[in-house]
Every structure is written in C-alpha cells, then in structure tokens.
Length: 117
Length: 108
Image 1 (tube, one colour):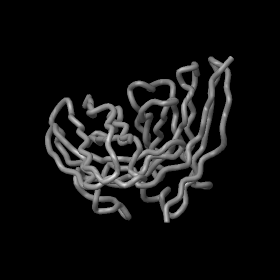
Image 2 (cartoon, helix red, strand yellow):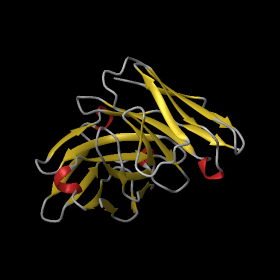
Image 3 (cartoon, one colour):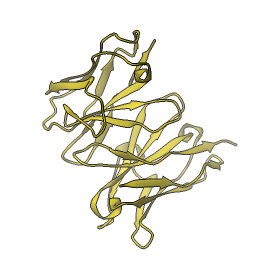
C-alpha cells in the first residue's frame, strides 16, 4: 500500500527558505510521479510542481517558477520541496500527493508552514 | 491555461437530499483527466472520482460524476451526515499541468 509520510511543522521568517520532505513507501517512489500541493488557511488547493523520482525530472507551476525546487533522493525514497524568498502569503499547509491518471489517490498528512517575523 | 470554476460556492442541504456540484472549464478539456475530491477540516483531500466519472476505491455508489468538454458535475444522491465537507475538482493536462477549482462548501 502506498504511503506518504511528511516531515514536521516549520516556522520561518520572511525572506528565508524552507525545505520539507515526503517519504514514499509501498512502491510509490519507483512507479509514480510525486506532486506538491499547498493550501493557505481557509483557501483552495494550489499545484506547485511534480517530480518523477526515478529520473529526477521535475516541472513547476508558473506561479512558483524560480522559487521552488523539488528533488528526489533515491537512497531514502524521499522527495524534498524547497521554497525560497518566503513571504507571509506562503503560510500554508503543504501536501505531497501521488496517483495515476492525473489524479491523486494518496496524500501525505500535510506540513504546516508559518512565515512570520 | 485552463481555469476551473466551481458553483455554487456554498450549498446548504439536509441529510437525505440530493446534491449536484458543478465544475466548468474555461476551455474544452482534451482529455478526461478530471477528478473530484472531498476535504474535511484538518485532513488532506480524499479522491472521489477520476477520469471524469470513475469512482475511486472504496467510494460509496451514492457519489457519481459525469461531464465532458467544459461542463462537469458531481452528484451525491442521498446526503449522509459525513458528506458535509468541501469539494474540489481538478484537471491534469497532457503537458503535466494540474489545475484545481476553488471549491464548493457543502453544509447543512
């Protein structure tokens, strides 16, 4: 059974960066693309980017181009997402997700990230 | 870029009633990669429907979905208390771009 387990909550100051992780098990790492989606408090879902871990090929939403980097560590079957130049508008819960046919069957538990001075 | 517009923004119904949620695309979707999710507070979204009309594993048959090109809908035939939540539609393009609708809140 596919499982995605994410790292813990983070707090950052404006202008800094945050790097969060998503450990995949149950075959997800080798057979699925893994996507990052964020959700600001009380708001909708926003696609950030997707990586195919076995070839480490990533594509990013235009909104985040130049500010987000998604990487995959094959040795630990973990995907990382780093977001830079943080502002208060980046305060959100960050999810990793995976699935097939363009849909997300499996989600991580979410990582709350707070950006505040 | 495809924009998905969901309506209504809020839908107030009672248990036992039928709910119909709409998701309209700004342009015709060339594939059937349209999905629906349910989200409850402090939980990740749960996949209900993929491929526009296919129920995901374990989803009760009171949930159904249909649509093509620019108009898609999710129907819950007889609302159960646990169905009151926020619902999102989502599209995936062949070029690897994902888009979400803004959500419909289904409340009592």
